[in-house]
Image (cartoon, rainbow, N blue to C red):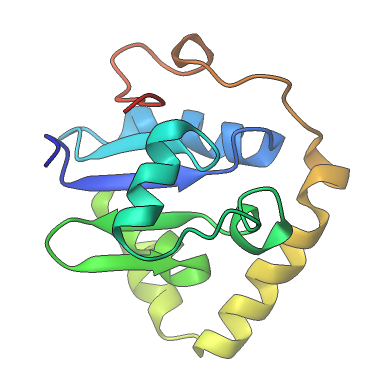
Length: 144
């Protein structure tokens, strides 16, 4: 399939999402993750392979309001569960992922959804999304 085993799909036009990738990438010392904009050709391909892509959804809030973490060996995760999986990959932040797991998922996802709903108002938008936006040596893929 692909070399990476773990994919982080994010909204390529979201300022908070860009900040998150710039935060995560240098802390992923073992380079486990590859970052993919949700609405890129490769992002759409990954979604299709998992039965998550419906053409009308890619431009709607349904998919773009959630980070999607794909572990090729274990499946995919969305919203707060995706955040926990990502945090657990980062040595200095693993503990936060463990602590978050104790918070009931309904509360975690409520907080996630509230932030997702307001993220563009709070953090603005990005006009484009390219590898040069992120730290050097970050695995970033847009094309199939």
